[in-house]
Length: 187
Image 1 (tube, helix red, strand yellow):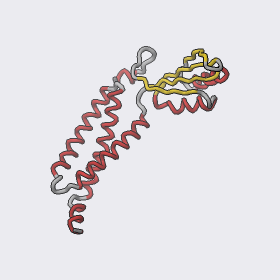
Image 2 (tube, helix red, strand yellow):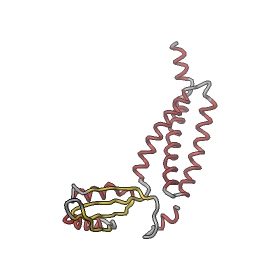
Image 3 (tube, helix red, strand yellow):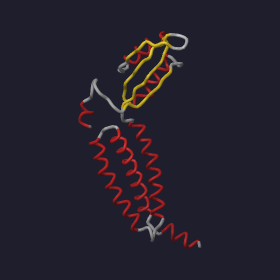
Image 4 (cartoon, one colour):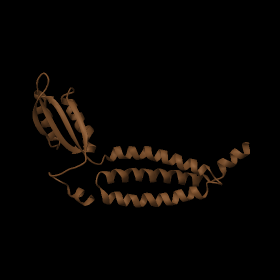
């Protein structure tokens, strides 16, 4: 029995298992980014990533499928690489944070001017609307920003008014306003 377990574990060179494992992680991480880019409207970069994703998949999957009967450990390593690739892809996606968000802030009249001032000084556009809350007048602020700046903006707001109501939503359609040259090329 020990011999059959040993044969199972040593039937494939370690370098080949490592190559399958890391290639699958890279392939799935690329696939995650491709899906995100395409869903955000970045067709050209998404298409380029699709080429490399499928290229990796063809070589890795064929290596695993061709050797499954003699070395089932390849399939296990392949599946493990897939799972870790999904996890790493989600981490990369959070770091890259492609897309736009719209942050709504409901704040007291007293603190809203300070929030507006700080946000505008840090380069963010802010639109304000007068509103009426349950007990007092409020100001609703709307901040349109890059998704990667979300936490910075929220931290700035909370440093001025920790009781402000903050809602952040991803924006799928952007029409009008300033469009950067990079965005025109990428789409």
